[in-house]
Image: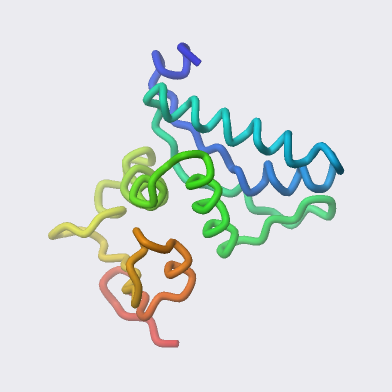
Length: 145
């Protein structure tokens, strides 16, 4: 852990894939194995490691993780690991953009790319509202449904 902190390594724990593999391979031990993964994320966060959201989505036959929607499950797992809703959202937006050196996205700022989800509910009270945005904007243009 100290080496991760010392080197400034950014971690994407891909908890969705961890859950899928545990369920597919470990049977009755899946829950305890996944609890260990959550515990590891808690320890990383407590140590000050930058954590970004990610799913490792792929269509493997033994542990499929669908692209897109699985990120919402991943944010929920980050909550289970001890992050606040705001921290989980930032792990998928501004923290991820910073990690990838994409200074024009991940936050709402003048001159930014303007990729936006407009929500009908407060995501800090319920992250599930992110699954059904009222509007989606990409590069400043509203997408039609």
